[in-house]
Amino acid sequence: MCAARRRGRPVTEKDRDERNQRFAFDRERAATAGVSIVGGADEAGRGALAGPLVAAAVAFDYRRWSEPDEEALVALDDSKRLDRARREELYGEILHRALRVVCVARAPSTIDDCGLHVCNLEALAEALQRLEARPSVLLVDGLTPAATAPSCEVVVGGDGRSAAIAAASVVAKVTRDRVMRHLHERYPQWGFAEHVGYATESHHAAIAAHGLCVLHRRSFRSVAYRQLELGA
Image (cartoon, helix red, strand yellow):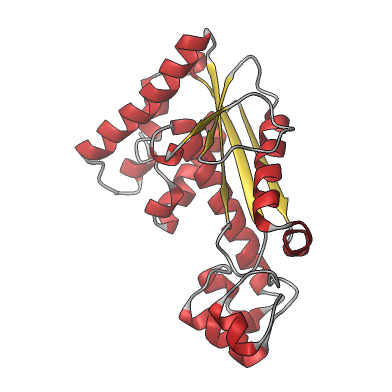
């Protein structure tokens, strides 16, 4: 029985239709290339004021799958459209069924030194490199990774179209959120357990009260930063 049913979360026909479309997208790409493995990559934390950028890559070997495997991931979607409980459920199901999962992080200091966009592209490229799932089709959400990446297809809106990219989106988001909640214990004044580093009213208030900590990206052009004359 899939996690959504086991936890009492209703599975709608829309869930099933979207699930089928995402897996069909991956399988069509694999069939065209004559392979069974599809890898997807995505990132989390691009728009945060604090904390790392995390890129993830997930490879599924569809030759090994049966209907229950897809059923377990019936709610798979862009992580931004899922609540925390659903993401956590899917995270476990993804790890159980994936051929390989890779996470790559870039620290706030590296983002400040090298630039957010460069870090984003390099992290995606490294995640795909380390996936080591070949021969395979590799898909990435929206952005062309750095030149060090293996050959891949950029899919605009990929976390809503490809199951592998959606899985990477969930893994990146859950991983990053867990890191930020853990770091809250060391830097409780900023409330990272609540907003995990994103720009919220409570986060802005914490910055106004306490300034920036080592987890904040000084290069981020935030309204809160400009008001306090902080950052680059």
